[in-house]
Image 1: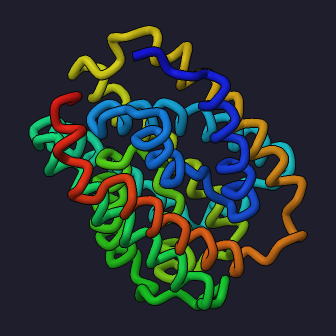
Image 2: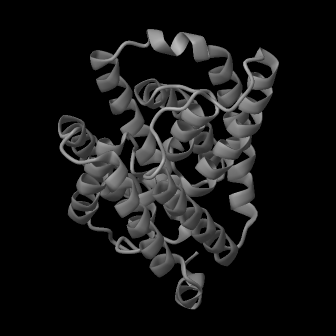
Length: 272
């Protein structure tokens, strides 16, 4: 089936713009587009979403590096190392798990995870942006918790094809007491190796065999995502992030339910 590069680009720009306003990549909103209007089976949509996420993350990290300092991350380095280790480990096994699931079970898993993320966004919209940190100050506790939390993040990342910022940022704020800007920068550093591991695993499984997927979907979505993320970054402060999270959480829940509901399994099962 021939895809529509123009549609892929046009969908990705507003998604990345809104993600840029919130400090996220928007991959959780790209997935319903890939599986919905662009009509990719879930098994193809997830690795393609990861590929677009990698492009978006690289651009975001370069942009952020020019506007913010990386020095505030230094106190969080032990936690970041443990989070990255746990996330990369789970991403490795998560892609294998997704490969073993039937298309129907994969879609059901995606539906549950997206509903959880949508609910989390709504809840986060009503929570403070800074916290003293719930974990004890002990280094060993922070490292162990980081590894466990990283595994959960990496599993979700590999199953949905997302960078995981919607999970990493709240983790750093509420568990480790990081401020929102530091958490956003640290999130990029954690997400990049996690996404890369997922991509390498999916590539080994043959997920990127068709070059047309890159020309018609990954490239235009990547360009649109970078452009939208830059626009979103320039518009930060114009709209309340809390209000955006609540609104987009509702949108994500509705769109995920429509795209991945059980009524579509019969029509999509044969295309896996």
